[in-house]
Length: 334
Image (cartoon, rainbow, N blue to C red; front, top):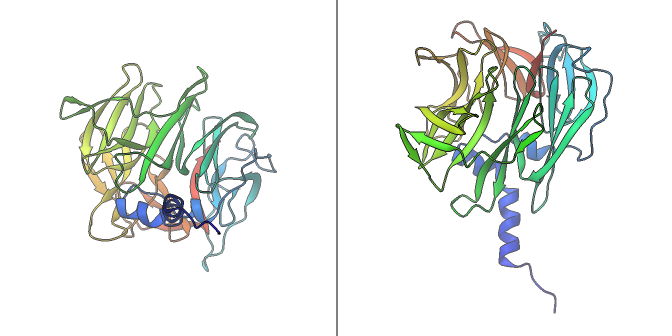
């Protein structure tokens, strides 16, 4: 007799195959290309371009390769991609800042695995960490000390959708790995909470090497939380803030805001002034499911409609196509 597929295994396979749809429904912000275009699991090999010698806009092209184009380059009038130089990296998500880079690679299967590969500005591997889950977000702090990432995982008992997030970071200076920030002391409305359903994603560090910002979800609500490494606490500042990205001058947060819960892609890009807590919608009316990057103190870059676009951060102007067929933008400055 030939044994049939067990109910548990069948359920797991269906969960993996339908991951992008499930995650879109729960609004966490997984980008589908990470699953549809898996990257190599081996350590990357440096190619022609490196952040140390080639400042510019680094993006992930349609094939999963990390390439760089001139800081001022834009798409041609017909949507043609500008000249690009390869790095030799193949990543599901990439980011670089302050002499440090991170390449997230994934190996799909019934139990997906992610590798977080920490690189220097010559793209030489410094560290490598492996853990379960599918890559979603990656960031490097401005001075290059902290590298953070978010992955999607299965199996948490509280996750009724069978998916949840896991966010961790690595401190290069202290050679210290935090696999998950879920044990942060979380304060909401001034009260210490210990929710079982807590999820964190999109962690971004400030330059003081202590403060960070992150999205936290619990009880069906999402919040922008300000974290403190020294006290290992996080205080919820504002509802309905996802995938925060701190401006280079440390004064504003770019984020995606849920504006229409009744549709599959309900997000719009906003910028929050941390001093006044005033938020401004940018001049982009498409739904953007990405953690925006700052090209400079006045301009955002983000992936939408199979390309990387830019838009002024103060709400003026109009979107401009920078890199067709690309995602995961990171501006490396001279």
